Length: 423
Image 1 (cartoon, rainbow, N blue to C red):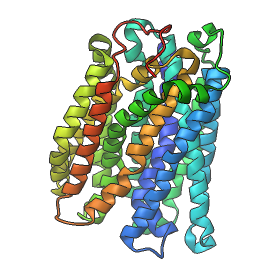
Image 2 (cartoon, rainbow, N blue to C red; image 1 turned 60 degrees about the vertical axis):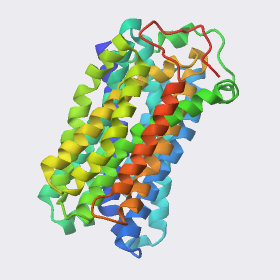
Image 3 (cartoon, rainbow, N blue to C red; image 1 turned 180 degrees about the horizontal axis):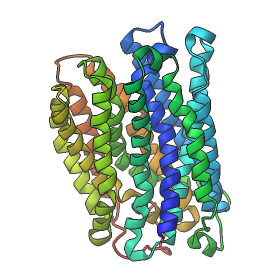
Image 4 (cartoon, rainbow, N blue to C red; image 1 turned 90 degrees about the vertical axis):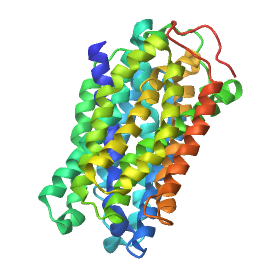
């Protein structure tokens, strides 16, 4: 299990590094480089629009890779998704800016971002299922939490690289060529991830399935459509909180509050480091107390903390901003530490790779794709404190709370492999 968990964690970290480095670049430099004819705010919104395309592609990736995961096995999905995401990320670093090739630049950016999202849509399902389905029943939440640490590690790698470049290069150098280096580094990281995943064994649960679904997505839509919608709505707030902290806040604080780029990157990175480190501990609670209980607790905490978070952010003081982010991310990890085991347990093994991944990535569209755009728009009006952003995130928390309340508990009892999930 430790070797398997390490391989899942490493690959997920690499893929989320690819995804996050684009979000950081979108917040800091892509607007002026690829949308120079727009105003600063409109350029940021346009850059966040290309950022959102990656989320729109993720459900399609989950359908495509989920089909092969349910038909051919979880292991091939891990290799193919990592290759696609890594190659498209390296290519982003090679796209000339608007000044060189005109409108072709943002179009290429859009296509490559779509391919990034397609690969990441397949990554999550394969990684968490391979880990969860190997784990003993009483420790499934713990072992499945290791892929959930991948986003935190990938984010720290992405932002650490950008922070190092920001500290050593001038603003002109960073805008001219420095921002491309993190994208090129994705090639090396992808090679390491492929090496680690090369020796991973296939899931025993998959090998035990005698009757594979001919078209998994059709079965999921026909039998489990209600479950897909509930899980997507339930996870929306987690995505919204994460990207409000890690992406929108970077643009807001550097552009509106005058906080320096290194200070903001350090605040956000420190928060995500704590979140990643505490994820397995929260998952242990999921093995003892149940998955649904932690999710309800996390949603409630988000609803209570969003207004204090935006008030602390608006101070522009590093320690207060860090405390605001930390409270939000502690609430986030309470939910997302157990989603890697909770979602798969809700589905039958024959369609688990497709069903869990589609629900997870649709939640990303609802929460992650729209949040930077909505928050930037809401923060552009009114007082210095972006109360509109707090209200938006609180409303999403209440929506997710209602969806979690309608879902059944799956743990800490052993997975119900033979009972069909509620349709």
